[in-house]
Each structure stands twice: as structure tokens, then as C-alpha cells.
Image (cartoon, rainbow, N blue to C red):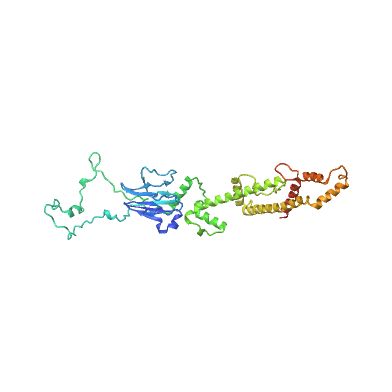
Length: 401
């Protein structure tokens, strides 16, 4: 009887011929360490150096957990106990980290015995090499070959009996129908049950729901990269990472929109939006709602999510360009009020109004009053002239873009 373990997760393509391993009565070890009988590569180190041990005892194969992260069997949500080995059955689905391994027990297969268990015994007709009898040998009178020879007519008197001493018929058990390697359909059903146990909902019209490889290939097509450049044993983690990157990008875009809106509010600049536009707004709702509306709206053709993202980036670039141009325009306008020619003109108008007559205000006093009115502003804000000039220039530049 032999135990065969076979990787059925995406790692099998990377492992190639090493994706399956058979164990005999001598057992063996499994882990990412090079000293194991079955080495399973794991760069993320979910597997321990020696993750599990296979033992054969009492006519069955047992799995001993020697890992840090635990071993899960079939649909169990808790790992097997480390206190006692777990008996393996034909068709069991084992989970070692991200590895999914199917177990099959073949009662007809016999593996070669270990060298320490091989004892050479001469057959009945091969006594040429028998040692000569030694004087005083207690076993000299015994015929070893006769003792080891099979009885061609065994007596029925030594058959099994029941509790009353009567003969009890015993039928020789035949191998169970399931004592063969599980089919691909059986493995697929077990994988589906595992996915449901993890919280996934089965959809009858979505047979590729659990096909991570297809999902990653679709993502790579959208991103414009070759899926062959990505590690084959990290497909689930890569899809998870892609979701995180998408979330972080939209979070950053929302923060950018918030800071831009604060600047517009500071300068009393309105930001009109078309009320008929079905696309979501960055400033409204949570990041979860934004993602859901983008993905669901794109799927039902309510809004083009890709074009929406392009428009948001164009709007952000237009804002930055308008701010830079409006800042220069407002500064030039503000500083121009302090130019010598501007001051001369202002003082001449004051003379015409008679403000510089005898006993009236002098030019320096007029300058003080002018400077005070020019720079008058609320706390933590800018002068009124600068704000108005900036707002007008911002609107003009934004609309022109």
C-alpha cells in the first residue's frame, strides 16, 4: 500500500514532475527545506522548513503537523491538531500554505522496501550456499526452509471463531471502489467546497469564478503587461495586490481633489459640475462606494470607468496649470500698485483734490493710508485685491483649458 500526494493548485506548473510524490511504509517529510523528502518551494515562507511528516502505522498513513502556520484538511476551518497525527484517507484535500494537495491511497501498489528491512532468505531449492552445521548448534536439527515454506493445504481448524467457539466466516475485503486516484472532477468539487468555506458564493452561471489564472491574465491584458513575466506561484497574491494598488490610487486622487477644492474655497472660486453627468464624483461617498460605482457602472455601460479616470487626471492637471498662471497674474497686479509711476499718479490726483495743500496730509502720510488699504486682509488670508485678481485669472485659465 502506498500514499500518493499530488499538487492540484497553480504551483503544479512550476513544479513539473515534482508536483507529485509517493510515500511507502518508511514515510517521509515535506517542507521548503532542501533536506525534506518532498521539497515544496515557497519564497513567501508560508511553509515551514519542515512542514509535515508522513508516517505509516497500524495499517494506515498518518499526517503529522510540524509547521508554524498549520495544515488544513478538506473543508475544515481549523488546522489539524499538533498533539496527535491525523489519519489520511483516499481523496483528502490538504492545504499547506497556498499549496493544495490531493491524497490518494493505492492498496495495490507496493514501494521498494528500505535497505534496512531487506533480509536475504534462501528459497527451498537454493541451499547451495547454506552454512554447514556446527557442533552444539541448537538450531542444527531444524529445517529452516521447511519452516518458511508455505503450507499448500492449510487446515480450516484454525479459522476464526465467534464468542461461543463456533466458526465465523470472514470475507476477505476487497479494495474499496474509492481506493484509486481521484478524478479531476472530484478535485474540482473539493476545491469549490473549500472556496465556499472561505466565504465565496457559488454561482451556477460563472464556472470560472475560482479560476485565478484567468483573472490574472485578464488583469495583465488590461495593464498591458505579459503575464509570463510574473511568478506563477503568486497569482492569488498578485490579484490581491492589484486591488490594493487600485484602492490606494483612488484614495490619493480623492485626497488631491479635496486639497484642490479647499484652495478654490479659499479664493471663493466655484467648481460647477454637470448635474446630468451619471459618473461618480471624487468628493462624494467613501472609497468603497466609489470603487463599486465605477466597476458596476462600467459593467452595465452606465459610465466608462477608464475615460472617467482620464478626465479626473486632466481636471487635476488643468487645476495645477490654472493655479500657476493665476498666481503670477495676481502677483503682477498686486505689486504693480506699488510701482513709482502708479504712486506719482495717485499723488497727483491727491494734489488736484487739494489734499496736499498747506496743513493737509503730506505724501508719506498718503502712502501710509494707501498701503494700509492695499494690504488689509483677514487673519490667515490674503489681501482682497490679490484674491479677486487670482480668482478671475483662475477661472479664465481653467475654462480655456
